[in-house]
Length: 142
Image 1 (spheres, rainbow, N blue to C red):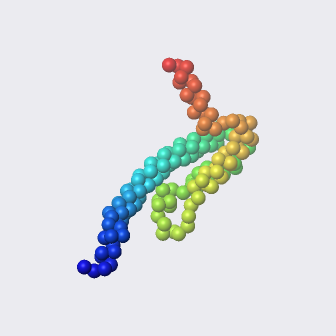
Image 2: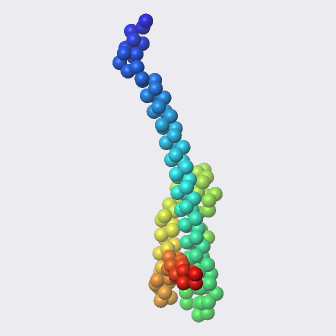
Image 3: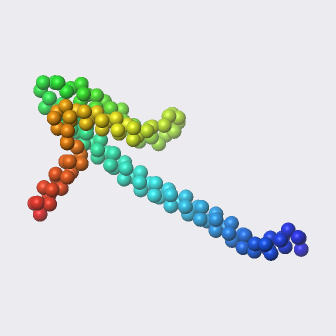
């Protein structure tokens, strides 16, 4: 019998099982991480979509009601930022080689919207406030 084989059997007789367990655990971790990442990405995508839709519709309504046209440029600036917001095709195709910082883009749009609502003397106007008020109204109706 080969001396190396004898040393392997005597020193650590379960080395093959440990290596197989390590490989199996690594593969299970990758699958679990992918699943968790998919769930987180889906929920964040929905959150961003709801918020961006709220801002877009609010700006569209403000543009219709702004008879004096004093906030037109600011509303147009926000609507342009929303139009320029990266689409899924841009995010998931890495051929362009440029990374997109979604959080930075969202913060920029939020900041512009906050400035607009402050100028309109509606500093508390936000998606969170609208949802809170709406849920309070619904709870009193039941």
